[in-house]
Length: 140
Image (cartoon, rainbow, N blue to C red; front, side, top):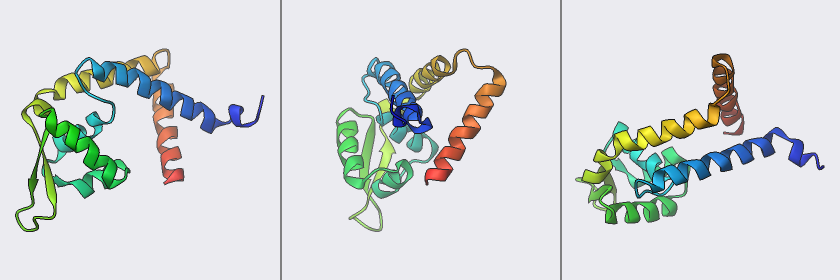
């Protein structure tokens, strides 16, 4: 067995992949694709973000966000409007469906989270969260 397969990074990557697969299955039941919930999450907190702000907050490239938003707009999850002061900037707002799905998406997210941490004690859950935050900071 190689050292790479025994590394913390490999275990983390495998856990992330399993989480993404489980979340994708849950979100598909709502007609969503994994990743779209992250955009909606940002908009539930603050509507009217520029596409570039969404890309920055989600740590993805602007063309990736643009493509996702096009699909989401077709599905009435979001709507885009030109900025009042700079028509080159598109602002993103929740669509009727994006607003209506908030509780269902949060329910799916929490169900997958509960599945992921099943069997861990409260202390282990807190430690896991702290360790994951530290890893993110280390890699930022």
